[in-house]
Image (cartoon, rainbow, N blue to C red; front, side, top):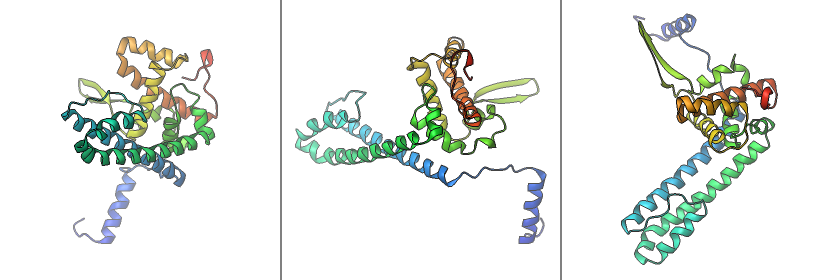
Length: 255
């Protein structure tokens, strides 16, 4: 518009909307936002605990103390406290960090209990957890992110919504498929990837989805197979939600 006025701005916005440049955006329910707030709080506490653990590990390396790479949640404090308390200088510098880490860990454990309790009290999440590899975090994250399953016309589009489909650059004779798009919710994509990895690598339960992933792993590699299975899991979760059915194994498996 040559002259910028409120009236002209309103007319311009109306023309843009009429031209189809903007698409509808789903506004999530208040319940979904509450669940996402709980999941985010849990993840923040977990990240802060890991940050403090890494800082303590790095400072102890200066004094020749190298901790094991993997320590259980309760074993870290026991492994470090004796070393710190035996040295007055180290105790003066690192003991407050260890105490702060312990307080953050207690907060994280409480939030983790609340998240798992919320998942176990939800009938749909319990149905989702019937899939091998899908736990409380994955089920609750997926349910909160989708919110309303009817907003997807096809279950196949759910994988693309969470960035689990390949990007593509096509121009003339060029047609280059790339890595996954990484669109959508990062946390949901990470939990779906973790569920697929658990199904392929740790779960002993055998089903047609896992068999398909194992065959794909032999030809495409482990990481691509896990991404493909994660996309399938998203499709299966959405279809279970829409149809109100349980996951069926063997020849009746939903894939």
